[in-house]
Amino acid sequence: MSVPAISLIDLGIDPDAADRLLPHLDSFVKWELLRFLHDNPDALVTIEELARYLGRDETELKPAARALASAGILLQVDTGQEYSYALTPDEELQDLIGHLVRRYLADPLTRAALSAQAPRHHRRARLLYAIR
Image (cartoon, rainbow, N blue to C red; front, side, top):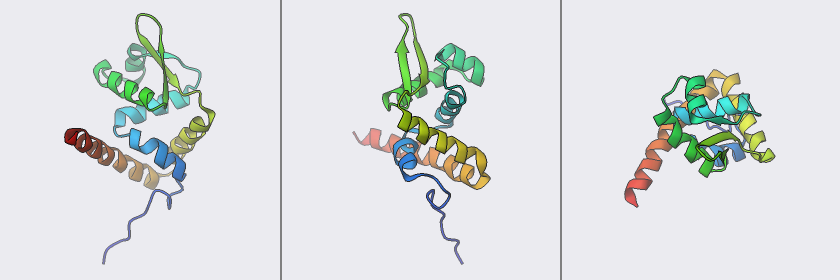
């Protein structure tokens, strides 16, 4: 007997958050960036600073931050010598990010479901890119 699949909506994920954010959160590095900047909403940080705070290599953070900035999820600010990043100033998107982060942290089942989405979206994005 098979167990029916539980949708993200069944787990309390706002459909707008799922539609607008999840396609862009296709790696754990992007999740970490989003969570860090959500938890530090006034931060404007460089890749070097993010690497230090998150314990990640700059070479994996840079493309992730740029992709999230291109999607409008992060704000990318050219400081002349480098880029700095902050959470989007879009209040509606900030609310959706907050909702997603709270749901992720609040429930282990939701966390597992959302974590499973990242590699799936990443594979789909790589396939679409390869087809082009």
